[in-house]
Image (tube, rainbow, N blue to C red; front, side):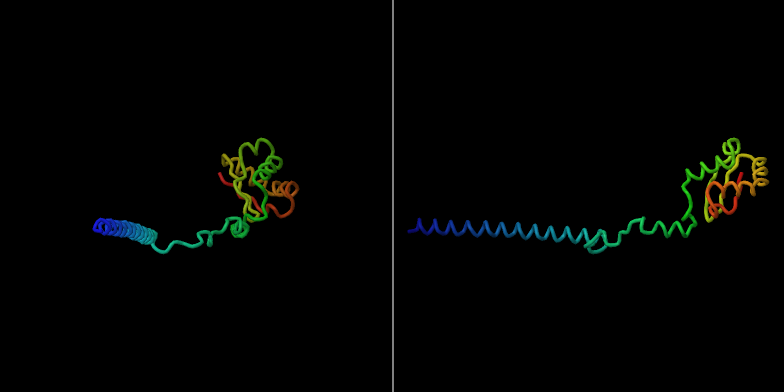
Amino acid sequence: MTEKMDKKSADQSSTPKRSVYRSNQDKSSRSIDWMRALVLRQWRHGEPVKNPTRNIQHAGEFLDKLLEEVGASGSIEEKHLHDAWEKVAGDFIAKNSKPESLKKGVLVLRVIQPALRFQLEQMKGKLLQNFKHELGEGIIKTIVLKV
């Protein structure tokens, strides 16, 4: 009978030790998870964002408005402007100057020397007429020359 009692008590004593050990492991892993979450929350300065893409907007949504504000909307492509400048100005002048920008109808031309700038200042009226013929009415209203 004592053998049965010893065997029974041995079985009972071994079972609780395992379950206690497992529950201690569960508690320690839960506390580690909790501490990890706490450290991450403090490191990130707050709660994790539930929907990280909620305030993200694409630039295309605002691009037209932005271009209009800076005066670049309704303009022509840069390549088209350079091609038109070569036709309007001729080979020599086009090689020694280039269109820099076109904003709100103001074409800024960069020239390589003051003598060419003076010559183009004298030809502004003719250049504007040629641009109106090449690009259409109202695209280029005035020309500014820079050395």
